[in-house]
Image 1 (tube, rainbow, N blue to C red):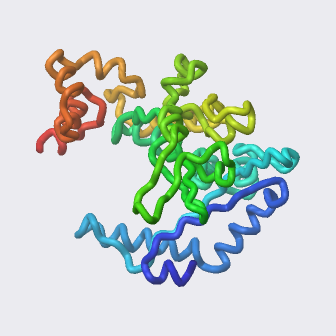
Image 2 (spheres, rainbow, N blue to C red):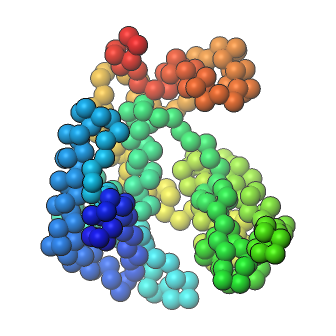
Length: 295
């Protein structure tokens, strides 16, 4: 890792956690500190911040370093499984604040990043209906040329979505590929009225198959608990950061109600992101500062 970082490469260290190594999280963080990874990353951030005062795209010679934890799931040995919350609890017991623990947990940090940008009105909700790359275009090819939509499905004959044909220089697909592309939250009956639909997006297809025998079922997992843990803390922090006149809501009802019929028609028909962005700004989906308004 040090060699890669010294050459400017980005390193993101994922640590899979189960019952057997949950209590070793603190020891690993101590080891990363002892090896200098954390101190050097803090120095890199400070250096880049200074560089970007004159060049907004400036980068340091040292690569970006990040580490995070993910709870493992082994349905053949459920006694080894832990919850995502168990990792948060272990990090906080080690000494991390709740906010710091969230940033080191793979299932908490993405939701936190989205909500943080929404509260600050730096972004708007993503209405992607697919849970992960499995539904959005990811392909995994095994050594025998068989193709899968999900790495958890590798070596399962029923989940092959196609084959690589080197002689033809192309992939040949079967009907299973089309089925994976329709594994979206809007088509899962149990999810259609769920307020967390665009947070969990139907959940993991592999976990659904293990739990219910079908990849095309919903899998809620800990989505509700994760959202509740994060949203309450970020909302409280945003109240303190946000000026009183700013509308503190993630609902689109208010902003969308302010759109004219012409703006609605434009959003539905245009392919220009710039055009949509200007309408979104005018509707109040983003926080516009006095400096932005002057421009």
